[in-house]
Image 1 (cartoon, rainbow, N blue to C red):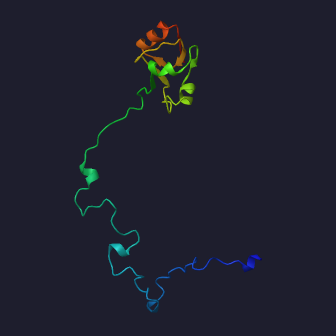
Image 2: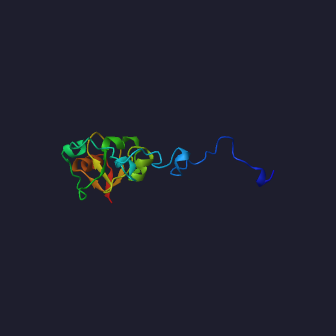
Image 3: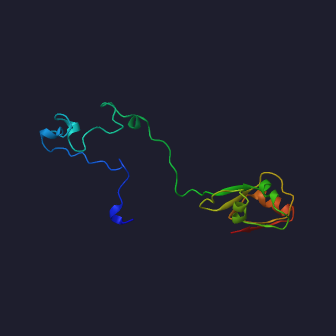
Length: 147
C-alpha cells in the first residue's frame, strides 16, 4: 500500500458551493441571497434577542444583587461532624476533604461551628472557631489550633 493509493471514503468529500460565478451557474448575480435589503448585507440580520422593536425583556427587568469582594467566606463544619474521627486525631481541612465532609475550601479557609455534641478529644486545626465550638472541644479534652 502506497500513499498514492489512499483515497477518502466514498461520499465523504463534498464540493464547495461556488456562488457569484455567472447567471448560468444558478447562483449568479445575488448569490442566492435574494433581492436588496438588510439580510443581503454582510453581517445583516437581527440578533437573537431582538423583539420587533419593543424593549427587550433583558432590559425591562431590573438589575438586582451585589456580591462584595471583601466579605469573609469560610467553609463551615459543625462539631457534630467531627464525631467520625477517632480520639486523638489531628483534624485539618485536608483530612476533612479526604473524608468528603467538605468539598472545595473557601478563600478564607475553615471555620468550626458549635452545633451538636462532641464526645472525643480531638486536636482541631482551623482558621476560625465560634465560642461554643471552642467550649465543646475543650470540654471533652481536645485542643484547638488557629491557622
